[in-house]
Image (cartoon, rainbow, N blue to C red; front, side, top):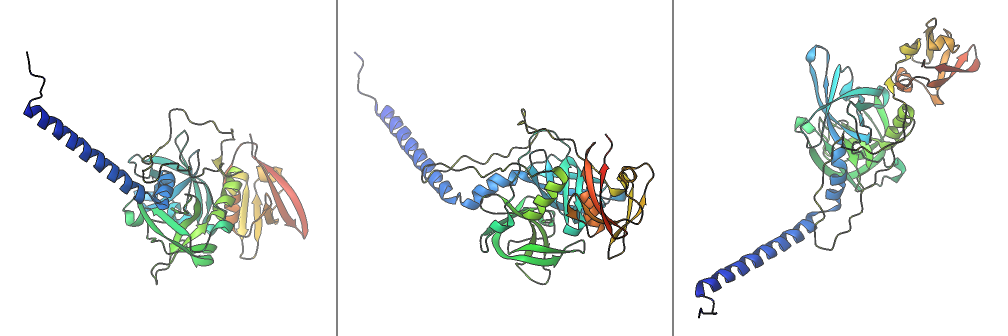
Length: 364
């Protein structure tokens, strides 16, 4: 009859298996606890917002490159906000999503040189990860500020600081003076231009635009309110809010690793349909406008053009477009920077000291 007593070798094998399993279990538990400790609010905000950040490259006439900047997706249909000076004069623009190698072509939808903001649309279908906008009134002095961008062309870099001040003004790269800026001590370098400044909710509080060359730890961002105004004028509305998901995990255990999702997905979410917007310039509606430093004067309303059919005449002083005051050619370019067939623009003009309200319709 065979013996029922295990051999000494079997006992040693079982003991080794138990010791190894216990060690692996203990190591996994220790790793989970350590990861849980390291997964801070900053990490959560970056996991949420980083997939919406892109590197922006502009190719100029003659194939010259302006260098790289950054941008951030603010609408699930692939609308990206960056600095105007990053894309000015570009014949071709490409964007590369955060931690991805694939590049996409983008086109300019709206450009506001006076505010140093530009709105691009990525030419790829589907739903894109995007960030919500935080109203400037909600920005707190001393709160954590996270900058993501492409400093010195290094790509996909993150720096953290605080909101150091509000309502600053500073000359930006294109030479214009921008007001109501947010000051931060988060590290900002060449190449961060156009990238997002975020809060701990992963919301956009500003677009990084300038640094103070003569000082360290002083940089500036264009507030999200200016971004919202551009989106409302160019697209008619901002995107639905995209909040940071609430984390519900046991104390001491890590949450799931961040998933970087890039459009287009297999089944994009259906959004409310909207007309296709296309870039539009004042000259496209037949307007030739001159800025003499004090006022904007219509020098020509081309015969048969939408402007002429709407009643605009040479000598008219342009006051408003769609209820927005226009004080510079940059304001006018922004007002007419995006349109669609059948879009109606309302103009207020001063004609011989009489204020008239005229309408221009884009041909269908």
